Image (cartoon, rainbow, N blue to C red; front, side):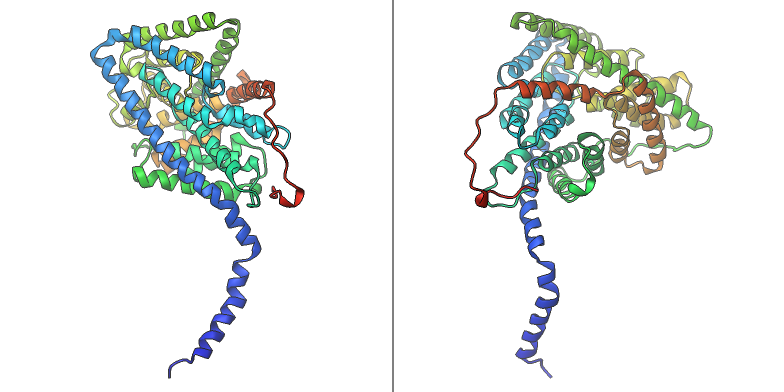
Length: 470
């Protein structure tokens, strides 16, 4: 017998009373309204990250092409690229120089009512534009830089802009959470590593309790990552290398490699800090320009002498070592890359050190494995361990480094060895310097932002009209 319309009405009324009204409460509506701008910003971040990656790949391929066919051009193009990259930053957006992660860390610390407007110096859309131009110009000329740190700054700037554009009365998440979430989304989209983005936030960007921002970060990482995958397809940053995850006596070799590579990363960070301190003595535009051109000329010598393996991000080198290792990598490639990274960063243009640190670690790990006569089938584990350890020595984020390398390669069998190497590298790097490279630069950017003229204060709305801030 068919059910009467009255029974349908009673059933709908019962469902609405017992389920729908309980699910779609005022709290849920507020949460959806708070999250929607972040989801929108995450989509934009995913699109921008993919576009930036394509632009970086084009610039790196172009630099390889001219260096392969006309290596003498290095003595013209490389100093010119260093100079153009530096001038763009110097004249239009000084906060666009370098990696971008210290700028995000400083902005998070400034994201309080008294200083939030000063974050515009570090995370404006102009900074984003100059960041892209400067880094691409440097890579075109043979610079040894990466795009991952810059992508994090780009993402945080996008989230800041979206957060500021929300209309009055719209329930907002806090400004600090907006920047934290932007940093996580940027790393996830840059490496296709969602867990790495989450761990990076907890370990590096903030000391807040996770409960304050977990839903915002989780959802932003998911949306940004899915957007990037929708364009690029599902992919691994480094593919599926063969890894034999040894335990037992081989762990002693893992620990030794981790200690050496962690120390090398910490020394590299100190080298960058020393060069930055030394450069401050050049207090005029002309003297600074001569420093930059000098860095470019030295980089040109390395590019001419070594070829395309001495320039660029280093990702092709990692892939060759993991998948086509012929034991023929020259012994001098690590010091060449080390010097190239230092020159490129100290030139004053925009460019990150995440990817280049990973490649430097891979080269050093392969050299140590060959020195110790480790069988070829066991070298991949040591290469991954050295990548984690060198990066940890530089940035002091052992769990982020381990999770990033894990997600890049999908080698879950080696997770304990990667975590162990990160912890050992962190311990020995702390002996060189108790503070990370990013912490030193964060303090510098904080002073720089606070020294800028205070931005104009907009008229405040009446209390009843002001949107609440969590």
